[in-house]
Image 1 (tube, helix red, strand yellow):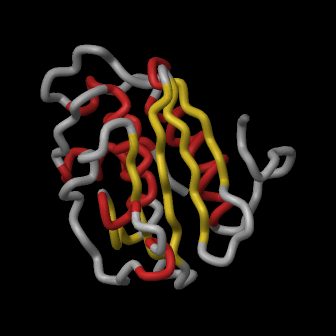
Image 2 (spheres, rainbow, N blue to C red):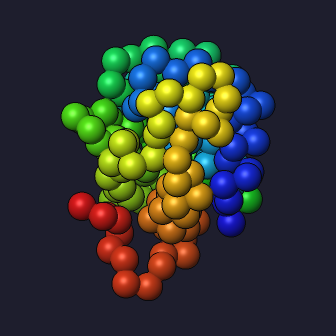
Length: 164
């Protein structure tokens, strides 16, 4: 299970630069996958390719170009435990970040809508923990509504599409 401390540790270790509040939430999504044990195999333009899920290498990559696109983010991960790949795409739409994650072989993506303003602070300076608010709540939502469903352990009472 992923928690706030492990996600913040990933963020601090990566030392990302954020252009806007959507970047902060997209990187928190990414950090949650890493904290859950996934390995990043593609991000940025390579993760946007038509065959990103089927052709992405299993070699671990860095986060170069992760926020190169305006209002869009894409990541491809492998799960060392399950040996499957997962494609995660995020789209900034007004004050929301829409997150869709598709596991290799799955017929439907898992979907989550995040109200960006609920989880980011406008002025955080260079202190990463000060740039987020209610990070524990965000991480719990990601774990419950995305990660656990990709792992094949859906939570009772929640649909496959998360909160729409």
